[in-house]
Length: 353
Image (cartoon, rainbow, N blue to C red; front, side):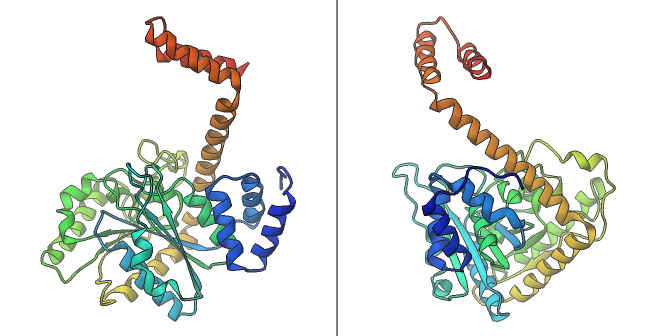
């Protein structure tokens, strides 16, 4: 494996405690990565050397769908099976104070004291897509720490926040009767990334109708696109909406998975066992069809693009001459002598030299 810069003594000590299974070391490693502190890339490089092992399940849906309650119920059921569970819960950041309430952690308080469950709450900090900027890296740390199951809960999302596909193997889209009819759902990006649909709060009026409409919508979509396949694998990771995987035009479509529509009531645990069984069935399909490897390759490509973009931005704006060019360019734009495009072109040419 290609080495990058060696670990400094402090990070090496942290890694040793991390490998010994010390929870405080895991928490500290996550803080190092979240803050992009010196050595964080070398730490991730070392932790990820063994490749992904955990079963990663993403839970997404509109605000108020009961995602936190359903994740808590799922984690509790996994613990009853004696599985250790890592949970990453993303909360929105206030545009005014820059802070976050981290309400997901509050709603999961009942399971937070279980030593077999590790919960990390993250604020979006302005990141779009339903996840925080470093959510994928935190998931990698939980995977590398040895959690066999990692549950990822997105912030409440709308039509285009599809970044969960870059972090999870299986995507569970949670809706409630108040989410609107299936025609509205079909227009949303959520319709295109679901491996499993869940209508939560199934005791509410309108839930049976929503289930019926979702199934009809899925049937109609299957008749005009890739039958028996979730569209999640068609989403280009890192470019979730605009592009499709290049291998889609080369490889035959695997068969055998039709997106199910389930009902749950997280507060009473109704339907949770069926949901977990369906998640396991989807994992089996991923393994047998080869789609797990396809998705992991897509994720790897997306991560490389993300890291390269981040590093290029850091290199560009650290250079004093680029900062000077930006300052001069702004003045020239204000004077009507240049435009943002000409100033940007000059900066790019200077970087390429």
